[in-house]
Image (cartoon, rainbow, N blue to C red; front, side):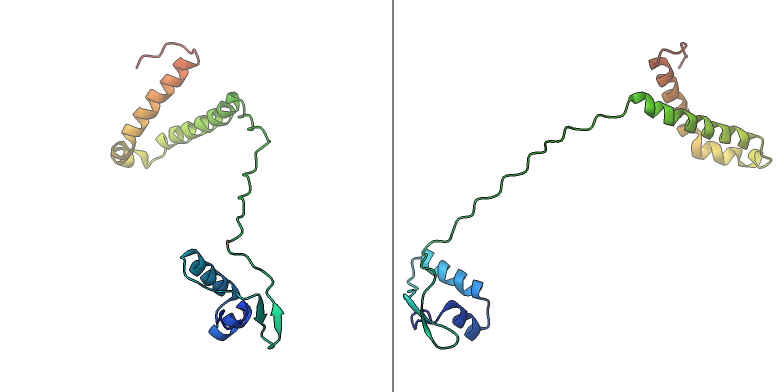
Length: 143
C-alpha cells in the first residue's frame, strides 16, 4: 500500500489498525533490510495527493529522563529514649493486666492451659527484660 502512495493514515484505515502500527511495521521492514518504499507524495484519506510529512528512515531516539535526585536529607530517627518512653508504660500496663488475672477466680482452673500456652513466651520475655535492664546499667540480675 505504501508502494501505491497511500498514507499511513489511509493504510491504517483500510487495515483497521492504528497509524502507529502501520508506522512500526514499515520501520521494522526497513530495519530488516526489506524494501518498503515510501514515496515523496502520499494519497490521503480524502483522496488528495500531498507531500509526505516525514521522511525518516530511522526512528527518533529518545533519551531517558534522568532519575530525580532526592535533595531532601534523610529524616533523623527519633531519639531512642522516645521508644522507651512509649514501651515502658505499655509494658507496665500489660504486666498489671496479668497480675490482675492472678486474682481472678477463673485463674486456678485456667492455670494449666495458661502454662502450656504461654510459659515459654513469659520466660523469654523475662530473660529479654533482664538483658535490657542490664544493658541500661541496672542492678545485676541473675539469669
